[in-house]
Image (cartoon, rainbow, N blue to C red; front, side):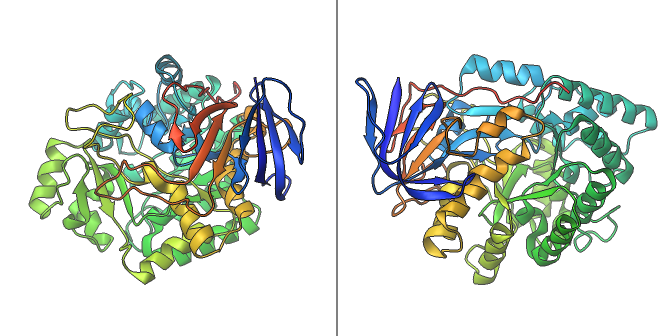
Length: 491
């Protein structure tokens, strides 16, 4: 079946085209782009005049792993949702379970550095599940420096995961911040040899913890220069906080010198993780200039009252998801810091989306609209629409061409070497994958808030994944599960 999108403003960040045209889709591929394309009997024709048509957004940093979460991301313009910062292990199980359940969006995973270390250093068998992964984050047994034998063992596990098709290596270094920096160098050398990127949640900055073995963001630049590995700095906004000027200047110097460093950011002043994370200890919160009251429990809405309560929750429920407020979004100065991270040259938009949790203990639902009472971070629902509102509609800092470059084209290019199938993504020319978003430029906006986080974004009128409609006229198609795995080439 062929689909013909008529008369939209077509934006292709690969070629720089931005103009009125038709787009013809057949067999999951874009087969023609141009004005006045002829229709054939049986074609589905959709009038998209007045709307912006571009390649669907590619999220390099999504932990949703559920139909419910992916549907929220579909309404936000995402066509490919990848868990690359943390990854899952074993990789074969992660892909098999996603395929068996069905996915509205394309999906993929990196090799999990944290899970490999936990298996070797703490005897914790990974099960490719994000909730058990969150629980492990607060376990100190895997956070120590490895012996040489342990280092060899977990590097071997990572290498096997890359051989099985992982999209690089996810490195949660900020959750084991006192480990020997030599381990990170060894991992980067392995990744370079395999032709696979690393995706790192960096350790603490020196301004936050003068005793850190090495400044977190400087470490990325140093190791990329030393090894030649492609190294992706996850959520630079949240790990840099009010030190964003210094961090971005250092990263730009590294990139200018030829290092293969890429950067991502999201448009929120609060992050989310498991309450047992090392950087949420009372001591490390103080280092950041934060208090226990900066932490809000995701499932209950409880704002942590004091240090005693923080220690209690960390001990009893180390994997419980929470929100950490690191910037004040009501402050013009702090909003400027968020804007600065997004505006950084070539910064990629990525959500760090989390699953939706309901009070009955589930994180999955095939109902639509989603059942009430679901808890998550609003970035799961609104990262891309909020970015478009801030950077295109309100500040006009980006053109539509630049927006699609940041949300679609650049993230795909991070994957080109490890997954050649990505070369057909992030673009809207002939031969490209038919992963397409159609946006109302006058109305696109986020609707989710910290207290109502599952409200879908507004303004995504149509969404196609491999040419299959997932959103039509602003309404989700509950019968659409066209998502396919994006895998690395065997290393």
